Length: 77
Image 1 (tube, rainbow, N blue to C red):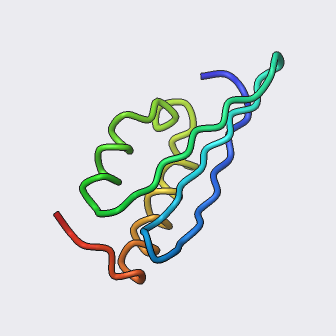
Image 2: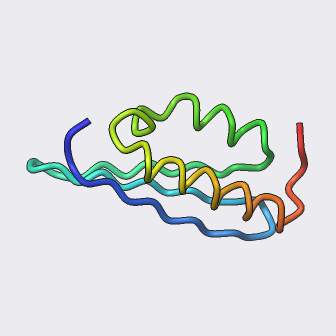
């Protein structure tokens, strides 16, 4: 996957909003998902191709999301 990628995490009473922005020479793609539980987060991680092109960033994202989900008391599957 070419381009620059960034993530934003926003926690609220509904869960954890994860927003991914991919900037490419021709424009940007923004993908948002509301994670209501750990299973949804795990499914999203398995589907995100960024894990191959930016493995260190993706690893840090997984760690931060796990911490946020745990501290928010988001239910486990």
